[in-house]
Image 1 (cartoon, rainbow over the protein chains, first blue to last red):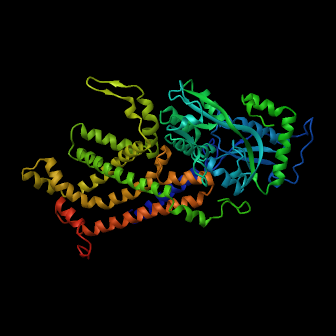
Image 2 (image 1 turned 180 degrees about the horizontal axis):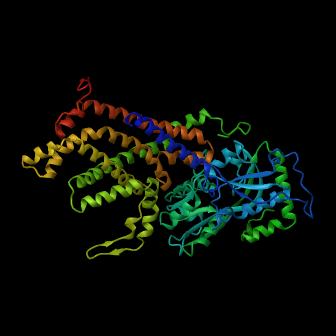
Image 3 (image 1 turned 30 degrees about the vertical axis):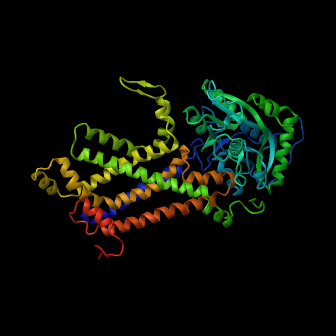
Length: 308
Length: 267
């Protein structure tokens, strides 16, 4: 027996490692915990017949849609635009709108979950056909992708209930601690852009006030959690998200500023995906025309953000 | 600097890398990483020694408390611990506690990112150091303790003057390892908004989309720090050879702080 001890131990170790690999690579049914992006929603079947009203949209020269699937990359942690319900199904404004677009185009829609910061690099690496993730269509992003605009959202500011610090707007943030999600335009608003630092923080200092302490967190729920824990005086996010956080907080938080500086949300596509961009735009236009768009917005209580 | 829209985002831009390599915010982040690692490691060593000695000497209550501490803080993820100290603790203690002579204010439990990171890293490190110190203690011949006690020392005195100095030599390589790991584990503090090196890099690349370049910058700084301390560790080990020498604390300090130039103890 002694002669075989070492090879036996080695074999046992390899077996353990192999099983670990098998288990890790085997499960594909985890609900959206993937920063590797597990497909989470196959929402619609290809439409069997053309819709009654409106023109059928021709997708035959859209290379991304030839496989019959429209794959969106999305950070599904941004209620009420995209988030998981209690059955771990993705729901929200983007989901409903994305599915409606897919139905019109006659393709299956899949939302892949991933961290917000990884979406643009992944789109460029052709992991997705498009990004639909409450992404603001700002000039910096327009340099690298094209947008199909579909919603208007400004910032919201939320504070603990009762507003103990008396914050009524962005100017009251001087000297305060603000929680925010990393990489969002709210960070740029607060401390300026990477190339042009400054922002509201600088504006405070120029006015002789103390600057703003910005605490960045990986996700918006974590930033809200910091506010609830008392680790910040205010939290900033896109208006619908801020409103929803306040609504869901059981009275612990309140919204103080609504839709400041509205900017458009856009579906992002690669610069070379011109055909895809055009059919997405066409589908969106049709949804607006036939009233589906307004219906979806109203369902989520976000009619204030309608474009046009 | 505007990204050329005709180039794929994933092409590594060396000018961006060069621009941020000595960026002020990045370097300040690196200094914070170094600073909090040193503080947390020092505190962790202290906690570890206390816990290991309590267990070794079978101090009543202390020994069991130490065992519980080691089990819990080695058994839960460091990330979870950090989030606990930062986010959960203030919510658990949201009312002042009135004791007889003093009122414990709930604000004391609202830790800044720095405080939460320091406490989280230190307490976690202490649990691991306890096991390392235990290994050091157990490597010392039982005869040492017997001899010390036969000279009239109490167990604690024997620990302090005889056992621990010898155990320290044995514990230096794993402790050095722990510090190298600490330099990198401190990056977890980015999750609780402590502006160390990784946070500084993230603050840039989440807004200019130059993920690879900024992570490369951060990696260079982590490498610089870890390499520097690896060399220091090697030097300390060299100066403390042979490990079997029985000098006490003063001998250790003297040998480590020997001015460079003398070829001491190296074969």
